[in-house]
Length: 73
Image (spheres, rainbow, N blue to C red):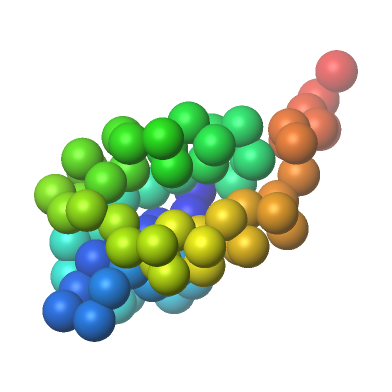
């Protein structure tokens, strides 16, 4: 799970899990992020995501795998 935080300056990806601010979690899969960026993430963070923050999140999303490969078969 990856934490996204809203603070006074905007939206940030919290890799440490310790940043102050209102947070929400998304799985580390691109599909989950695509759904979240359609509106549920903004709702969870109780904010409107700016164009710049939306672009920042999309750039991070592009680095994620399409789906997680299960280690156990």
